[in-house]
Amino acid sequence: MSKNIVIIGTGYVGLVTGACFAKVGNTITFVDIDKEKIDMINKGVVPFYEPGLDNLLSSYRGKINATVDYKVIKDNDITFVCVGTPSKDDGSIDLIHVKQAVENIGGILKEINRWHHVVIKSTVLPGTTEKILLPILEKKSGKNATMDFGLSMNPEFLREGTAVYDFLNADRIVIGANDERSADELVNLYKSFSLKIFKTSITTAEMIKYASNAFLATKISFVNEIGNMCKKLGIDAYEVADGMGLDKRIGRAFLDSGIGWGGSCFPKDLDALISWAKMIGEEHRIISSVVEVNKRQPLKMIDLLKKHVPNLNGKTIGVLGLAFKPNTDDIRGSRAVPVVNQLLKEKAVVKAFDPKAMENFKKMFLQIKYCSSAEEALDSDAVLVLTKWEEFKKLDFTGKIVIDGRRLLEAKKTARIYEGVCW
Ligand code: UGA
Image (tube, rainbow, N blue to C red):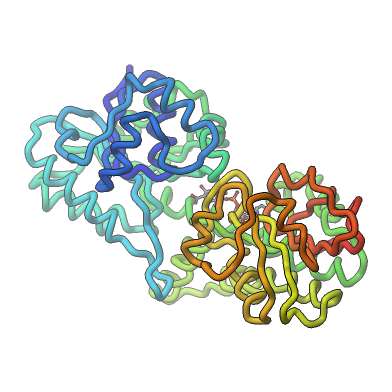
């Protein structure tokens, strides 16, 4: 049976979740404090770049609404909390948005006399939903969880750039609930997608999210460490990964070596996990090393560059790609940030191009030149490939020095000098 759903927070997780639920017949109301974003959504415009999302939003416009007013919760059955949980300066998790959202929800629950289900989708550390968010909900509403309202934790495993695909083709849906009614309602809601469902407790669901992200980041840092050895020995780390990946216990996914992981999730989630481990007095050696390896990895590009251009002072370096990965305009945690910083420190002249992320990068780096095409960035003393955008494959690198951080093998065919970071 279709439901009336409220989605709090219109980042890529909230919008993709809502749009996909609308696709299977549910009615969606997005709530966000950002009026500008709300106006855009009501016009069917996606406020950021996420492939396939604009199509979904316009196809199911009749089922989608957006507002800044939490009161809409009154007329709905389920509220998903999808607001961000950024890092504080010390790496610990900042719960300000999620607490605020839950306070507002609690205030509305006070005014309604029927069961309403609150689902936490924001990434929060184990224990947060039960020990911090549930008490806020109960206090603000004057009601009891389970009896008067449902509470569950439903982590997301969506990758930016492929979030719509990931939602519709997820390997599993994790449903963390401590009461049957909440668990059953979420199971029914997800039924239309025919995906594998894993039911567990709220705290376990929270931990599954962190453990999954930490493990994926570990795979990448591990393969980068192996890749650095491969580079010294003249071995292709991708062939090694292919050989390893055939073992089902290992798997080939997330074994692409290069300049490391970035994004809005891995960096903040690993920092939060380390900070939390410290707080509860537990060791975090592996996770801390994963972060350390990732900090050093992008600078391998500069070492390789200096092999061919020893003094960067006054040299023009073309940078291809600024987004933390292709198909997004997101530069959070992008490996381009430490690379560009180092180039500037060594007084190089940086000419950068990215098909989507230049506007965001400009907010951090005004002092570099932004090119109007990838070809323009190629007109440099050397070129660094930092993001594997599809369009870079078609470039002509004839005569160029290319240092490749993302395995753009097409560049190898024509470049005068070609160096891969781990191959
Ligand atoms: C990641 C997870 O993959 C999602 O499952 C999770 O839901 C999401 O975080 C989140 O917590 O919200 P995302 O940050 O969008 O998704 O990006 P990924 O595709 O996982 O890539 C992360 C970084 O790792 C990128 O910089 C990418 O270039 C790098 N990477 C990925 C590698 O260097 N090698 C690989 O083999 C794979």
